[in-house]
Amino acid sequence: MSRKPTTLAEWKSTLLAAAGMVLASFLAWFGLSRLSEATAGDTIGSIASVVLFVWIVSQSWFYMTQVKSPRRLLFLMGVSFIQVVPFLFAAVYGAFGYMDNCVLGAQGPGDILYFSYVTFTTVGYGDMSPTGLCRGLAVSEAVTGYVLLGMFVAAAVSLYARNHQG
Image (cartoon, rainbow, N blue to C red; front, side, top):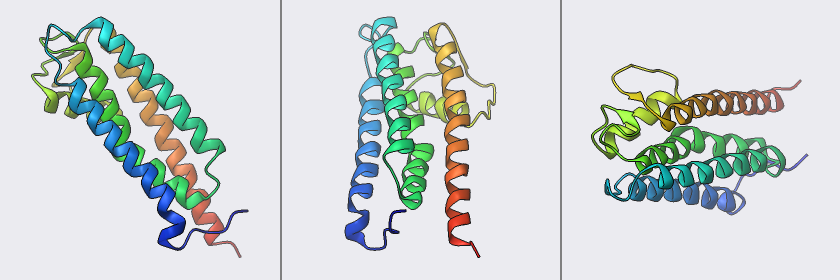
């Protein structure tokens, strides 16, 4: 069992990893969701989808096998749940383009980000809907939301159980 991280120095690598994930996801969303209609489309969107899939699988593997501290695991998964994954999915939606190529009713990057959060949390207001290849992407985002939330809850319960044994 690893020792609980208590000092800033012990949290440094975790905080840097979280900051890196936040920055990378923001830059991906900022760049891909602002592509011109001539550039965006099925090719760029498909490439972005594959990169997103590889990222999600690698992060899941990393969380499950490499992060030994429940506190660090909970923190990193919380950052992913709140910001990183929805921003990355929004980047991929943006890579497919607007003009109803991916999400019906989306007019720009803000709409795509909103749609991503609504899909990730499985709220589904119905004011925007995916079309074409983005329908499968939206389903995978909803499933990712379920799985990540389950992993997050499991890590929180594990941490609580370790701290309240006796």
